[in-house]
Amino acid sequence: MIRKLFLATALFITMTATAQQSEKVVAYIQQYRGIAIKEMQRTGVPAAIKLAQAILESNAGDGDLALRSNNHFGIKCKTGYTGPYVLHDDDRPQERFIKYEQPEASFQDHSDFLKGRDRYAFLFQLDPTDYKAWANGLKKAGYATNPKYPQLLIGLIERYNLEDYTLIAMGKKEMPQELTASFAVAKEEPEVIPAKKVKQYPQGDFVINQTKVIFAKQGTAFDAIAARYNIPLNRLFLYNDLQENQPPQSDALVFLQLKRTESPKAFHEVAAGETLYEIAQEEGVRLESLLKYNNLTKFASPAIGSKLYLQDMGAGKNSVAQNP
Image (tube, rainbow, N blue to C red; front, top):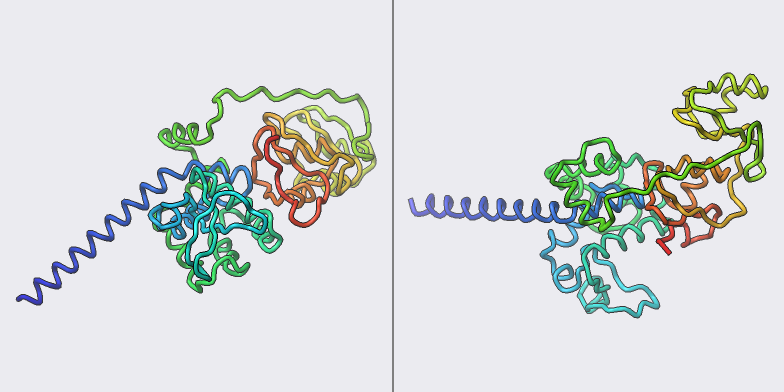
């Protein structure tokens, strides 16, 4: 009888601890889901992956580094770093880890760490909704030494439905009302978005980045353009980074020759309402090159005022520049 009572008590304590841990994780997700969505839109790191990594590596905000330094991803001081830091035993005793003023800064640094290193570049070619591929890819790239690291991330994503936040960041799932309010606070940006600037282009064909182009009105059929300029239809799609014959949904630039891989300009400053595709068209640069130079996926939405490289800036510099 005493043994049965002991086992029942132990089971109750275990269940209570598990429930408390789950509540702590849910509260952590509620607090940081906004910055995870924002970082996915800025850099392409899936929100589900970022939240799972943050939960795991910071013990949902209760880890020693998170409590002492707002460092939720175990980011160590790099060579030449002169800012504030804390000492923490890791691979070696008393290693230096960056101390952040706010936790959100560690989320941003984590994104920049992944997108700024060549060994993680292949991750940004994956479907951002394929969290299993991302989790296994992080292990393959050497992010963690724990052989169960992918399974731990996948387990967190599936248990807490973190994939919802990836879909929200991509605009494929409606943002709940309560998240809309908290996300607006997290972004610390005015709710009024500047109107998209209307650009003027010449009539007929002209040149952008040494490549012939026209400005087609909404609804102009691509096969009509191809016939007029004697260009095979499939090549016209190739020239414009398109996969299928879909008339422009709005007035749009249509290239009549293959765009160049680089521009004489060093970068493009993102304006209100611009998409990555529109930027590639405006600058006369292939979309795949624009994504490569900035370590972005086609789903990314760079912030207004950020700078996108239009040239291969070399190892270690392939990233979206910050607001000036």
